[in-house]
Amino acid sequence: MKKILSILCALFLMACDRPNIGGTWTMPVPGMENMTQGFTLSADGTAQSVNMATLLYNTWQRDGDTLILTGQSIGNGQTIEFTQNYEIEKLTSDTLILRDGDVTYTYTRQ
Image (cartoon, helix red, strand yellow):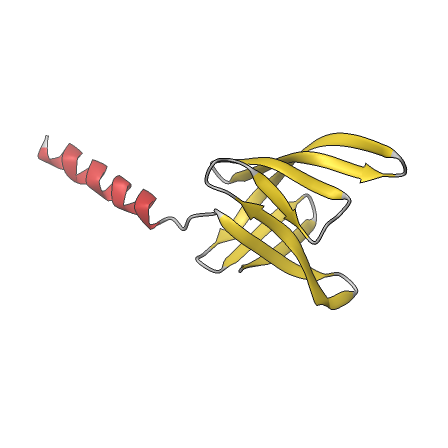
């Protein structure tokens, strides 16, 4: 019993040490490095785009090492609902690295 409690306490402490993914994450706009874009992940599960007028995030959730963002892509007179799954490659208190297939995105917490 004592060993089980020790293991449970260790698992709890590891979970508590995991950085919170919530907050505002940005990266330079490709080709316009003096500008940034990204998203805000709120504690209530809502998401908002940062400096992206045609990509509107609505919600987010985390499933293990997967970040799931939903929203709307707006362009050419039409709106398309989407769900995007990103693999979380790295999460620290100030860096978030996401992978989508062969593409990697590196964000900094604001």
